[in-house]
Amino acid sequence: MKNKKTILLIIIAVFGILCGAGALALVQQTAAMTTPKIDSVAIKNVSSQIVANGAVTAQTQATLHFQTGGKLVSVPFQQGDKVSAGQTIAQLDTYQLQQQLQQALNNYKSTRDQFDQAQQNADKGVTQRTTAGQDNFYGGGIATYNTDNSATNYLNDVAKRIVDENQSNLNNSVIQVQLANYALQMSTLTTPISGVITHEDVNVAGQNVTPATGFTVADLSSLIFRANVNETDIDFVAVGSPASIQITGLSYPLSGIVSKIYPNKQTLSNGQAVYQVDITVNNLPNLAKMDQTGVATITSSESSDVMLVPTWTILGNQYVWVEESGQTVLKKVVIGKQHGSMTEILHGLNSNDQLIINPAQIASKKYQLL
Image (cartoon, rainbow, N blue to C red; front, top):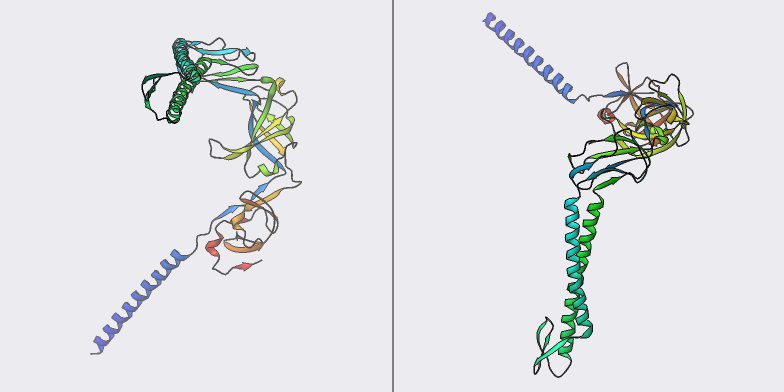
């Protein structure tokens, strides 16, 4: 009997241990599932010197395309040749376009004659009495009238409709002539500027081209350095800011001035979001060539380095969470100006702080306040 009680107690104890272990594992698993995931990133610092990659390009250039496809019959200039404004740089076969224009002119002549005849008849009020009580208007059919002016009114309405119809046909024929003439003009590409042909998609006559075929002319006297400034730095760049440019292959830096900031954001092939900035350099056409790459160092509009954090990480306009030695710490900060989705931090953070970018995940927990 005593052995049976001992065995029973052992079984109960083992069962209790197993239940306890299972409960502990469940608690740990639940805790792991409910523990907030903390993500942190390095704080963005905008230096008083903003560095941006770029390349030499022409501020004045034109890329020309045909409006319609066709057979290319003339390419009088090759890439690298100099051209003057108004010169032809490419031309399509115009035989079909000339025939279409002649067809449109013939149609215009015919509709013009019809309109003139309709207008002349309407001006003279041509009617022909056929039987008592009826008038046969030119091309207008038979009209029955009473002793009042109803027949006269009817005939006037018919005359007006005929004239209006002929006027519409004449207008359409004029439009057809204009379109055919425009297509003929667009078969010839003329450069609007003087410069050098820097690119040709096609340089041999006899090939069929499409509206996507392009020819580029650049004015090399308008060379500037175009830099790609990171979107978080662009607010610290201003027209007139001094810049230093190191052109690849040139042994010394060039001094320049920011002359233009483009308003549209661009996305580079590497996914970086940038704004383009033109930097004017004296005598650049004699110092560099088109498409030469380089690095620009632009003096920021701020006198010192600026610390930026995502605006959504700032709680109540005065607190941010950071990670220090594996612990989450709430720090009080002083904020400055907002730049897009970023806000300046004037005081309260160090450059080596790791900012927590999902503060909502830890808002319900209790942490140290500094």
